[in-house]
Image 1 (cartoon, rainbow, N blue to C red):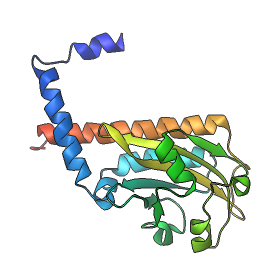
Image 2 (cartoon, rainbow, N blue to C red):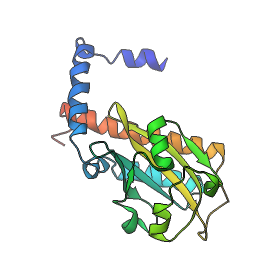
Image 3 (cartoon, helix red, strand yellow):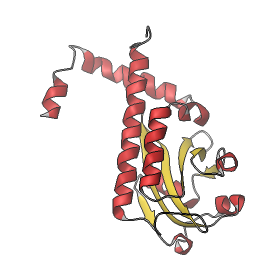
Image 4 (spheres, rainbow, N blue to C red):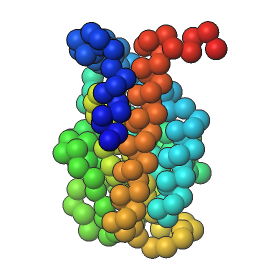
Length: 198
């Protein structure tokens, strides 16, 4: 029923125009820096993702934006008390779990992170804390994969429970999907000049 309703919204010729819209948007996004892309996550989207971090029992969460030009994932937003130290950290795309999630485009959940041979503890050493559990999901918007959103539990930090459940992974994935849709809505409105006079 929802699919039939959205088909009624199509304008004649809009499907053909959609290809040039997609190309234009992709070209613009590819020319953006991670700092410019994270700015697309507005206050409503940030509130949604922060709520998801709290709901799944994470100590903190991070939005990683891909910088494909240099082959790195950039910690572009962090919800924790060490955000100033974390934001701007660059993870090579060939190291660590976050990069694996990006490369494979598959969600990840681990409650004994120290046992995972793929875990890169460079960031842990930077903030002098130990990650005990992590969930991470691919982050899509603008017709493509743009990064990863991760949530972690840290040793010595207050949390509602130890470890993550499969339902927590699903919750973070759902929130990440909604954030992507919010960004897409804003991008399309901007592209079409909708609301410019408001």
